[in-house]
Length: 344
Image (tube, rainbow, N blue to C red):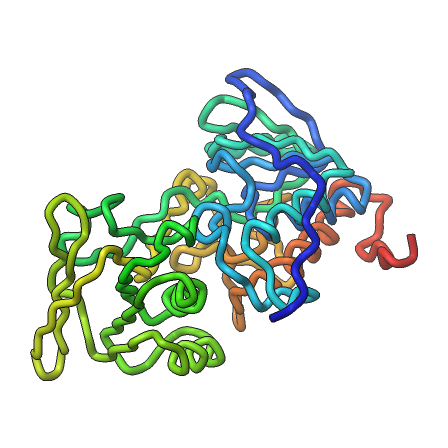
């Protein structure tokens, strides 16, 4: 196990009271308060820009805070391991000296271009006038991929992510899925749960190989070519019927919790109306992280380009690239390269 991450001292910002008609003038607006957006806020402050951050969620952290605040993350530079919420808290603390304006609980709705600025209006009517925009998320609602009769048991034993690991302590848990989330939950819950069964419809996994091997070597029972036929219970989850999709052999598991880690379908929401060039559900960008719209950049998981790799670490680098390429647009006297922070 690695050294614990340093606990930040900053107070986490909450949803504010910005109302219709509120107007903010800043150098840079970041749409999305996930890890890439928070790092972008720090980096923009480092470059001397005033910043606003807009997000439809009521707390910073994006998917990390909403879906897996207690899950350990292993692929962020400088941290052998770090809990999702600790990472978010540290990113907030890192940006805090530059006093970003948070518009939390505000969905970015409209974008209009002026002569030398752009204006973004939230669904609540708050306006941000800025020299440039970086989109790092704020992609609207996440719709979970379906599991048979799951709706009957939502919040009654069935969940799509685990914000509090202790909620599943000493329970028999069924995890459904073969991606990173499924295997990460298995690793995190294995010391706490009474038993864990992980089922996947194929024998190939989309998770990191090291995590897969760790789970296979643990007490977790991993069943391949296996799917869920039905969840059962009287008011809450009590069992799940599973079946082998090659032999049609059925089996009933006594479980009190089901984690449906099958992924989510994301909707870009109002961003689809901005005129952005899209590749499927992602925003197309060039090597400068610039979109097809003037003064609008993007970074993080919401972007797409040839060779794109969706990692938090990649999002950090993309956010810095976007800020630096936005710098001469914000202030024509500035150069692209700011120098190294170690020179300050």
